[in-house]
Image 1 (cartoon, rainbow, N blue to C red):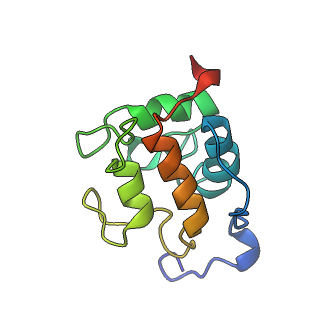
Image 2: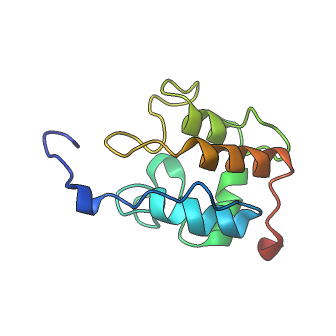
Length: 130
């Protein structure tokens, strides 16, 4: 439900298959960010909620490494305490008031979160964006 309007199930992004491993940022972007975050009204080019736009993989990567609304980078390579992980894993994140994706969207599956955490903790590489 957004405001007083319930979003129909067919309009919500499909759940990501948690059994598929995320190994680099290309996977993070294509398998998680595009279907769950880079949506109209959220983090697409025109909406850029919270100042975070994800119009393509390399722009999303640069924007995730940049400082966000809390004055810290959203992703700190090698740091499992990154703002991104806090917003994805907590219902009451320390930076901002909403978990991501926000209700009525379902939280990411635990296996997906584990894969994103492993990617961040392993250095948050994005070979295609160098």
